[in-house]
Amino acid sequence: MRAPVARVLAGILGFQILLGALLVVGDLQTGLRMPSFGPGAPRLTEPVRPGDQRRRYSPDYQRPALDPVRDPGELPDRLALTQIDGDTWRLEGAIASGDAARMIKQLNATVPAPETVILQSPGGSVRDALALGRHLRSAGIGTAMLRGEVCYSACPYLFAGGTARRIEDGASIGVHQHYFGESTILPAFVAVESIQRGQGDVMVYLDEMGIDPMVMQHALTTPSDEIYVLLPEELDRYGFATGPRTDT
Image (cartoon, rainbow, N blue to C red; front, side, top):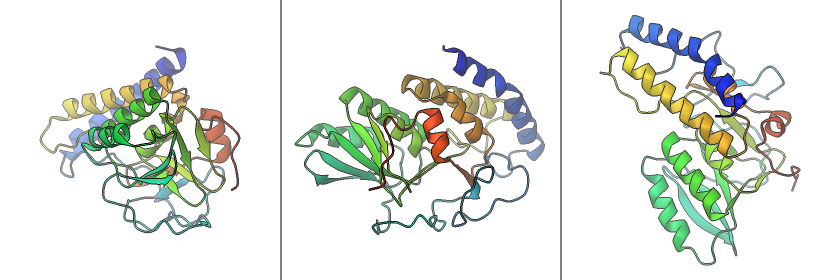
């Protein structure tokens, strides 16, 4: 394990202990929703500025005002693959459980073979995002995001799988805490162990994909009903874009 991953894992140990205590006190009455700290965040439609990047979030909330150059319409309830032009395809919608296997089968069957997939997703299943991201990498498929479109929650992990990653100016990428399999009957210590293992898997994956796992500091401190929107300089710092961003 590389040093950055080890440092991040060590840094979140105290957070996990606190989380376990909070789950015990709450007696799991509301399931495994990660606890929210501090005042409520502004709405997602409000502009994001350095140091003011957490916004209230639900996949059903209004999308941010990103001055889109196109109207993408309603996103599908689960990932859908459509051809745009030649070897460029669009992969969009919520990431549902089982989507990795379903999408891998479709990607393998496309002719011509995809060279780039354009992503837009409100997030969903982390495990499926990781599995599909690893397939994109092994198949040599790049990822891209267009101006005015979003990639939140588990979607940035899928985006990270691209061999080349292109982000147009005006695209929005954001992270937050995850469930990793919700249950209302597990003892708190078992629930926390499952969450910690899932977070460790994500950090190892990011390291494999050439993304600085320190991006998880933002995910771990942002409740699941909020989203931390990464600034362009953070996307560069953590390695999400493999080349210069474009504005067209």
